Length: 321
Image 1 (cartoon, rainbow, N blue to C red):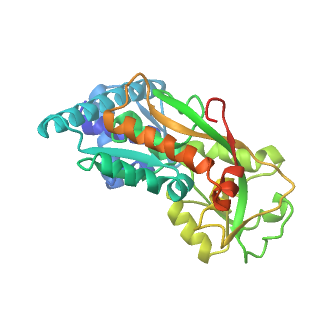
Image 2: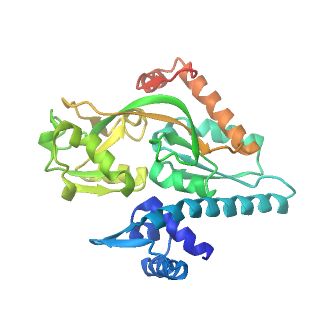
Image 3: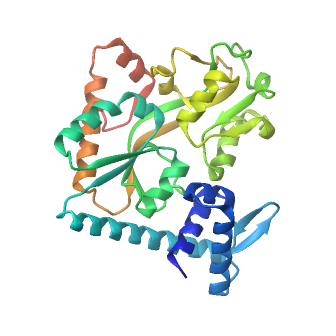
């Protein structure tokens, strides 16, 4: 087994398809396919089964995937440790996943304070969608995430500290022809752009349509693995989306978009700090978390009407008053 082959397997497990895995890795699909075929031939066990146009992990493949995640993560952390020693023991980089509405509201003061305290540490930010960031956390290419806390199966190998809860809602640009719709049934022939990974697709479809007795309009749904991209498209195209209520209070959103006043109600999700399980935060990560908590509390206590509207969309969780 070669490390690159195990990385391909980890990406496949995270993304749900070879095409998506190749895209996430920045490689050609043929390269990933060849690597997985060579892995399967090398171990002499069937790891993948073709189902329709895609592939599915066998029991052996699923078991190897868990080992591969551990191996890839250990190698990444070893590389980070060596990198620190090459620079006199100091951290040189902190990679953070940030959910879009947190990035647009609470992040800027945290970055300013962090840069003043640790100017030698470079920051790298990644759109904080769970389907994209959780695998990177396990692998070690991300240090922490501030964003949605996923289900227990998604959190395998990770730990989460909840901060607050928010409600999801259907949104559209104010000029959308169905902006005044009152039910989901009126929206089934509209185009949608959603932001989630393939592995979350079934749960999102159930949450958005299935629980309301509706068949998801799969042919109308597009996916964007970037909140900024989805936002840019919605400003120019009549697409609907499914977003956290707090996003409506950000400056990039509230002037152009509206929450549809639908009869249906939608799920509540939790936002918090997600890190690798049973692993202490590095000094840089610990500082970033502390500064973020300070900024949240300062904003929540602000008399600014904009902050008051923003925090009205959030429910504080026990211990985060």
